[in-house]
Image 1 (cartoon, rainbow, N blue to C red):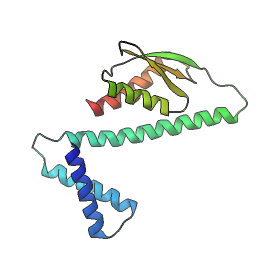
Image 2: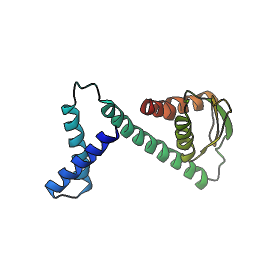
Image 3: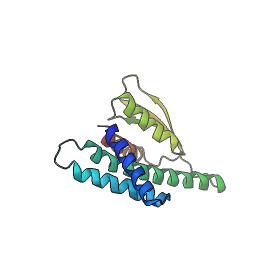
Length: 158
């Protein structure tokens, strides 16, 4: 997969150099063009994991940015208003993630989102403890983590 990504970057660089347009939009177009060109060339080879993962990675980045902006707005609103709208708590989240990489990535994504903090992982690595500023329903919070960050991380890494 690293070789395909490197090839994609090299083809993007060739595209930008040939066109002579060094704008972000041209880099983006060159990346997309090289991605689809490589996809067409390798169709039917059975070795196309890169082409399945890359769109999921891009979707995950946009999902994370959306969650990050949403959480920042929520926390900023809390800071700027005189009302106390928080309902903090610690939630025990059962993990489907098994490997150290999966658990670490999940914990980091949760911690990077304002208003939430990963506290600890159980010794058997089956539970993640998370503190949140806004817990209206434990079930909804657990569901948002399981069907949000964890689901997308596992789709990429497995």
